[in-house]
Image: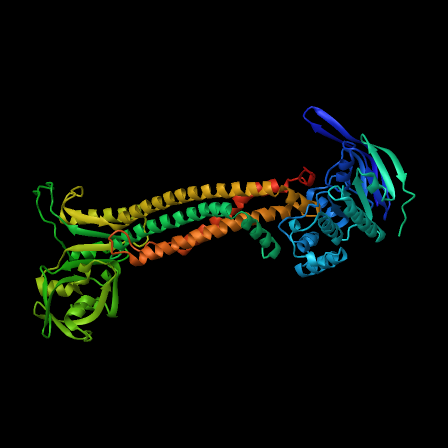
Length: 230
Length: 410
């Protein structure tokens, strides 16, 4: 599903050149549940941005579903993000003036799905998250856990092949974190590839494969033997 | 355009910043309001001037005899120049002339009577073309025609005021009135579009009849010709040609400015037109300047809006919004604010003009200030262009927002 070949990325700030990713080789199969770990500055956010086609890379190759993601213009990138990827963020990133249902339905708006159909689908996904009664509420009327579940519903509604989650539990208490992780696991059981960036060990341990990044290279990869597919 | 979601988003951002949107909208509305008021006033001024031309053709040349002021070919100055029917016949042959009439006014007021009603009115005689030259609007019957001239018929065309004075409610057509005790058959009733009361107190007769009945000569007071759609230069050339021919026939120095009087309406009218064209341009420049101030305001607001919405735009991009859809969002908002505010300004401006127009006392040089359809269309187009311009820079900025920067957690 995802194949990275010798990905290099550096940032230039003034005269300083910061080499963030130093030749990453990585393959993630369809239906895997993977966590990317590393301390801050390890390059894990940059890696996620490249995986999410939010950022470009300097050299190497990134294949998403066997398609090379290189030299994409904004419109193309938007298309692939919309069709292939679903994002879940630490700070939820819901649109504050839209209610829960409208937030969930938004990716379908950019797929030109009719208003009626996308609202119906959004209600279905909210139902799956157990948030049907909250459909009319604005994000600031909801708890962190509820917000994150809405964000996950939004990521899922476009039926993506890959879910990219950036510290999805970073702003949640431990109980809610576990619930959210269970949700990711359910999603994964439906066959969707899930990639979670985190620095928390107990979160990473709830994925099947842990990739440790350090100073822009993959330091080690661990397969979680305790992980069981339901 | 009819995308409900887009409009909902625009409305929700507008609602979030009511005061700011109001102030920006106000500056645009004010700009358009001022433009409409200024253009309407300019138009009112022009209408006033044009109405003063309104009683005669704007392409006419009027010619009348004067008194010589320089000696010429052995003759002393101080001779009176008197035109007659031969001058009319000669002048009609000049190339470029469309309509021609001579005019002869019976000296003093005519005593006019019908049954027991009496009145004194101006008695004026002319050729059939005079109807077009003076823009006489015949309400009933007809004006003087060529057969009247040829057969020197005793017929008269009276104004609606004369009718009211002498006939009350009776139909005057076909009846006889006495002018200086000579009976004339009434063949038409007219009204003159000018507001000038004097032109409504005139009775028109065929010139040949008047010359024979009241004077026994072939003298005329005034010659008037129209020049079709000739330019000012062409009209001046025709005027010179007539002038030289008359000077030759009546033996006066063509350079003697007092021997013959003339008034070229084309030239005068064109001067006014140029003046008003200048005024209109000036008004547009001021109006557009005011609107530009409004545009800058809208542009500023949209810039702030884009800055505030950076994160939201980033989210949208992350879930698949194309740059084009982001540009559309910002542009539409900008056009919506400018368009709506401008439309209010337009309506208020036109409304005020209508109000002034309907309550305006009769002023000689200010009539019916109005913003016509073309002005409204131009103003609307201007608004759309303004809205697009105002939104363009902020929209481009929004489209360039990188989702990773927008999504970075603070």
